Image 1 (cartoon, one colour):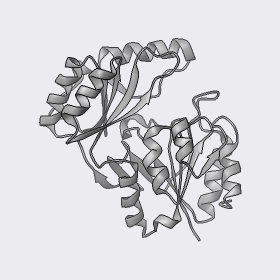
Image 2 (image 1 turned 135 degrees about the horizontal axis):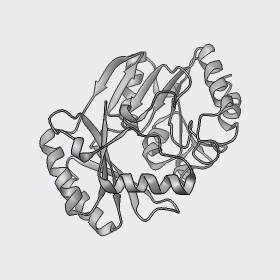
Image 3 (image 1 turned 30 degrees about the horizontal axis):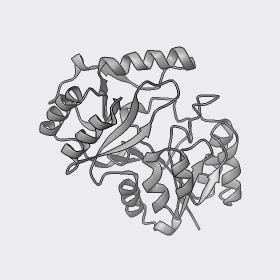
Image 4 (image 1 turned 90 degrees about the vertical axis):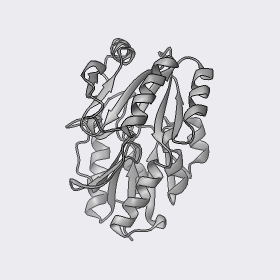
Length: 270
């Protein structure tokens, strides 16, 4: 029976630890699985503007961007929801009030404040890799022209984030990702309420006329939690968050080894 496999990009398909690319063995596994009649759906927190050309060197059957905010298949738009302009203006004001660094992520373009650009350069000095994002400064941002689906926030005070969350909880959800060893700030994603990877997966299942029992999901971070819980088989990468591992049905090897190929074999997808 054909399966529909939902795959996160960063830390899952795209290794950020050793090779900073999709491994050849992963590409081979996905191509073989598709040849066997299974469907591969990218399911990423990245907005479409931040999935750059050549980043994903294989064909997929569909794409879920912005953690469920935008869905496409074979260049056909299935669904797209954006933050309303009135909300976006107030949110940007609050990002400043609560001392957040921020990035606004859209379908065609993404924009960031000066903190994010400074952090980007700092990460490059430490890791040797420039983060793969198409970013423009806020002085090029035009509220009426942008189609922003989500935001990424950087903060130092958890009290500030808590106050911000309380103010906006009726409309938006913050998914906290903690911070990396080299970071001075914590990070979280701001999503429209009830928009998440699972909401995108449900729409994809309806489009392809497939069922929850047909689903397999691979992820590594906390914005993958809902989809791993929803999928019939939820798989966390070994390099993933500890909390996600506890929620997963299976643990895959790390993103920098031939782990996805091995797991596809174990699941008899190839």
